[in-house]
Image (tube, rainbow, N blue to C red; front, side, top):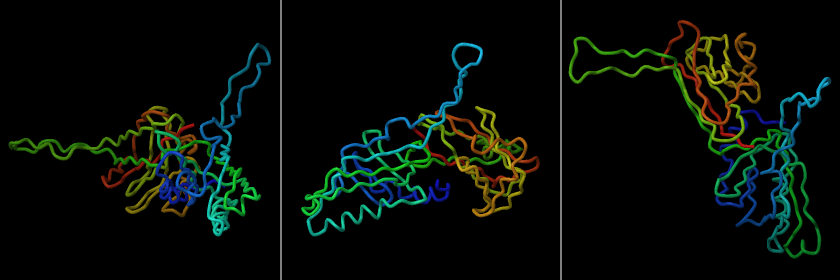
Length: 305
């Protein structure tokens, strides 16, 4: 089961906290690699493309095919050549720690790998396979040939740090006061409701959009694609409408679904993505809704294949 945006946000707060150098892999609270009892030789499925489902179909009346979409499958990550070393009298406790951290679970947790100078990347995965060979080396405190396998239902890899870009509703500038005094005071600059977000990765990423009241009919428009998410709902001061575009959910104050408030202009939430590069967005609301304290915040992580 894929974790919700809230679950992922809480888990990601500690994601990679133990990762300090190339060769480190952290899954939940378990750190593997240099300086730990758990060394590994290879990591498969991390730099490779995940499997792809092709929507291309053969032409019935001509040569060739009609091109269709390519949709990525789940990513399978394998850590092979696992070697565990510990004193003979504590090898059991060391294996127990590994076992507790790699039990099958329904909720995906952060998986972070740092391979090179590009730094660590994050995925959300669950364990689907674990091998701990038991032979003569086990009793001596040295185990070789182990392996762990994970599955990430979202095949993209993400930067660790979440980006957050806020905007307020459009507001005009107050202009000059009359009579004129020197130096000239133009007042506080107005707001355009525009914001710019940059996905430095090479894959589309799904943002989380938070609308905070007081505002009626909050909307966010992608000026590149023309896509709009808009909700026919009044938000009082303190209300937060959270739109998770990956999960396709619209939640008021963290508990109540309000997806039914989407207007006819609104695209399906899961199609509202940020392409690689810079995207211009605008925050708007229903006519007459101009409170300067209303905000929209776009939270996202750059994504990589």
